[in-house]
Amino acid sequence: MQEKTFASLRLCEKQNLSSLRETKTRKSMKQKPDFKKLTLNKWKLKWFFLRKMPLGFISGMRVVAFDDEKAAVSIPYNYITQNPFRSVYFAAQSMAAELSSGVIAINEVMKGTVPVSMLVLNMDAQFTKKARSKVVFTCNNVKEIKQAVHKAIETGEGQTVTVTTTGVDSEGDIVSVFHFTWTFKTKSSNK
Image (cartoon, rainbow, N blue to C red; front, side):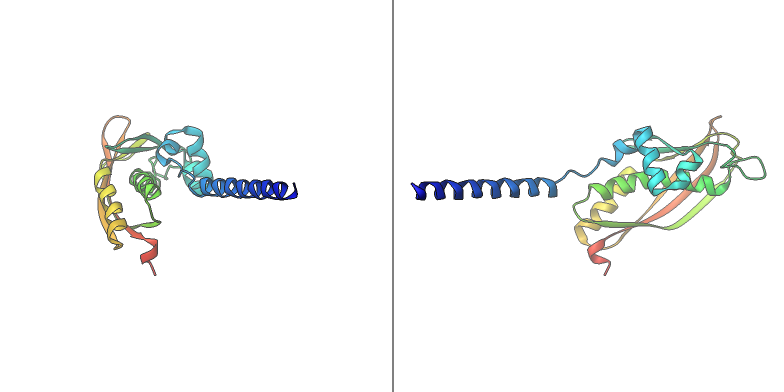
């Protein structure tokens, strides 16, 4: 009789251990957050800005479009973003322009199978008109950024890509054009 009791206790212990291992495995296989969904949700984006990019929160930047073709970020003309000449300060424009390509890069890096570091290596800008209203910066280089991130992961070597983002005001006029050179490198190869 005692042997049956001990055998059933051992069986229960094995089942509990097995259940515990499955729970740990499920937790370690936790799904990565979908950054694209986060950027398109007004409240989640505000929380992200508040935690990771406070200037984005304070300035009123918004991700207004993000799909497989492009990403677009808007920045308003307001007290926080203005310069003494009654237009959007170039640094505020730079921040929104960088984010229009940055959301694409962050999304691809977060979907990757290994950790990847990303950094803006170079920036070039041309300003063609005073920005006196909300400006929307659009980057259409989704495919190029994806390829650079995937190649960095596949080869383990650093990759660079230059992308263009164009700022258009509420009248439909181009106010600035930015070129950003991004670098991507797997963190294991950073040593």
